[in-house]
Image (cartoon, rainbow, N blue to C red; front, side, top):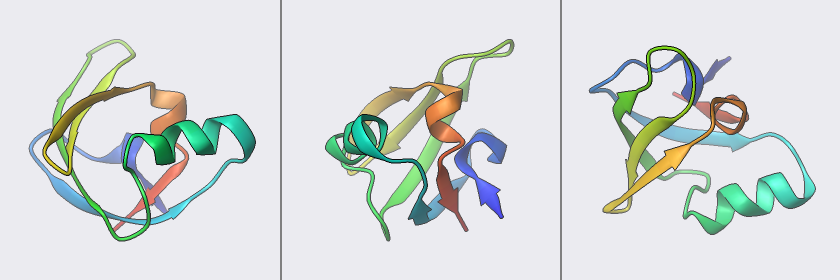
Length: 73
């Protein structure tokens, strides 16, 4: 299982599954991150948060804890 947290800068991946539940999952889905969508990783902060991504043409910042809940291929 590979998560968004493991993806390197400059890579594009496809969302397979969202783990987590409740408010956290809802927040991720509200960002437009759903199964089947492609995510491009623009930048990862060297020591921690955030992971900066492009989803559906929008530039977003995710916490690494949230990125770990997004399974990708």
